[in-house]
Amino acid sequence: MTERRVGAVSLVAGLILMGAFTGAARGQQAAPRTPPPAADLATSLASANARIAVWDIPDIDLLPDDEEGRLVRYGRSVLEASARHIGPDAADPAQRFAGNNLACVNCHLNAGRKKFGLPLVAAAADYPQYSTRTGERADLADRIDSCMTRSMNGRTMPRDARPMRALLAYLTLLSSALPKDGKIEGAGAGAIAVLDRPADPARGAVVYAQTCVACHRAGGEGLRRNTVDASFGYGVPPLWGPDSFNDGAGMNRLVTIANFVHDNMPNGVSWVMPVLAPEDAWDVAAHVASQKRPHREGLDRDFPDLLDKPVDAPYGPYADSFSEAQHKYGPFGPIRAEIARLKAEKGRVPNPNVR
Image (tube, rainbow, N blue to C red; front, side):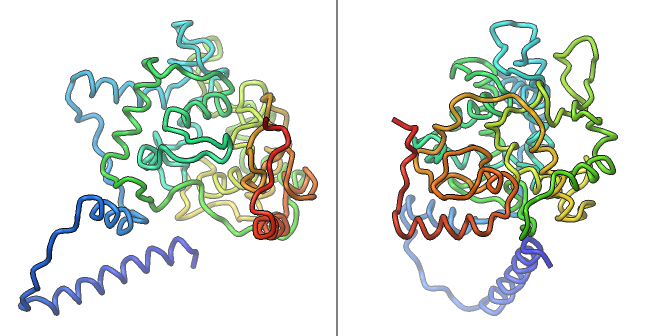
């Protein structure tokens, strides 16, 4: 039984136990209580909802036909058809912020509403927060710009640009039923069992040929919706090559790719009933990570504290002495152990490339 299923069983058991306790207490007069201060109540709510399993997401199609409703719906459209609105061939040259023809929904599945499909349901509740990548406090617009410059291989958007305002409005609505800093069940891309060996790109090429090539094509180029007009985007996104995410994107990290593939691919699969074995997911992820893609300048300045750098970041510098190849393909257990030791010993390892 996986950790997620154990969590679900525990939640059900807890609800049953709570119901039994409530039933036993009926008929007994409760002592009057003084309501807690608002700040304490907010903290209690956040703690009580530390892992919210059922997402209360408003129906966007039922929003009023006013400026706010139209802005939210436009934000969903930007997320789903990014190339049309902000891609390199978008109709308005001033709105061409993305450098490729991917869509946000290629990574954030079901418009950011799928469990373990990199959901965006809690994005507005999570920000602002400290960014280990920049060493600064980041708000939600900063996080969107990180995707713009990495996953979309483009440039930052002005805060007053309508696509930015629309994305913020959409994400804010998705999080509107969550308490501040509330945590959702199904966040991220999952957590499959780790390998005790390096992931194998050659073995992954075989898995790719058996499972992925029919949709993503032999060259990883994906499938365009329109062969003449690139602004229509992709029916199936490219996984590498010039129109894919760059090497600074989160999806270029092995842990993210492997978990995402395991819990969501082939398209239509969910974490409830995956098709690929974890070992196959790790190896096919290694195959994807081994391919050429656009390069982002300045990656050596990411993570001012190198002890905050993800163990699978495929580019240096590193706080430890493990090779770039091991950081890219694993195994990650020895790296994690060394990072824990360095944190206990030094507390911090400054990035020499950050001035």
